[in-house]
Length: 340
Ligand SMILES: [Zn+2]
Picture (cartoon, protein in one colour):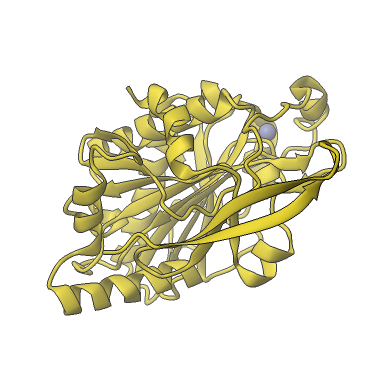
């Protein structure tokens, strides 16, 4: 396994210092599994201004389809051959078909009746319970023998900078035979790695990274790390499971352990003014023993809050080339106190 980086240097005349020569260095890092590149540059202070949440949230509950007075009236239901009870309910959580599907078997899981939960107030128990509801959904679909019951995926867009159009916390839950791009790249690279070395890439990564400068901690059978070649402008947090390769193998304890790590990542990013994130499960199909279940938590922000400038521009969007504004090892020192 190689952690490769190409060094880059820019020379310019500095307008803030009488046009003196200034050298700015950066790095292009290669993801050790897929070779996907990520640029470590800019080196701005990782501190953002949070918006006025009261102003941001004001009026959004009235039109929210996930709030208790509307959810059972205006959300769709599953046909009886998929989910006989039509919608799945766990106390105040509800799972129903995604009205805007991007695959055959897609659902939304609303994480309770509370319309707005600040990032640092999302309880691990709530997250674990919503994950469990999604897992129950996957198991029910699997029982029907549906051909799409291959990769059980949970994604989370929290708050508008992440791409969420609603404030009300909810998960995107889908079961698919069509692995999304990056997950597919990772799966084929991990398969190749196993064939060439006889070893599991992820087990090797955990062994190499444990105790190192990108290590955050171990919770249950999950190792939490900062990604070497992150996709987020403020780094990515990665959690890799021991032993298991598929979402369906997660136990109730695993779900609580994952939730605990996620809330620690949220706490850490909150301190630098981040209040939004994406979180994706990366899963193999059952018995894909060349991979390991892992998840990626990526903080999201606006580059310009007032203009609503997203942290994704042409470089990321069309070249799929990431940009991270600090060395992941430095970001790791900001994150690690929350994981102690
Ligand atoms: Zn709501």
